Length: 145
Image (tube, rainbow, N blue to C red; front, side):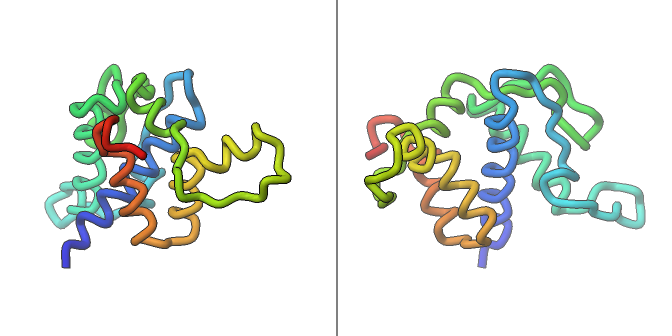
């Protein structure tokens, strides 16, 4: 089983959601805020989980979902912010979400957003839902429903 891929999806969602909450302000993304404290190995190197999360954040930047000014060792991305691509993907609606039609349109828009759906999936610990939502996050725009 590829558990590191599940961690990758969690780290992507967690990092992007932190930036979405701060948008458009710049924010420092700390690995420890996303995965909790991880003890370094016997040589003082970050754990594999820590390295995986930090690499995920760097990958998100390389793929154009966020940008940052510098790294703080392998602990954080400093002055990070969503790119237009990252923001538009997170603000996009998730088509299959069913909502109470009595809710105001503005509430429905927020609740249907990919950001809110990712937040709910992370909070509930529903990994299969998180995988499905991440697929929408990483789909090419023409592939998004």
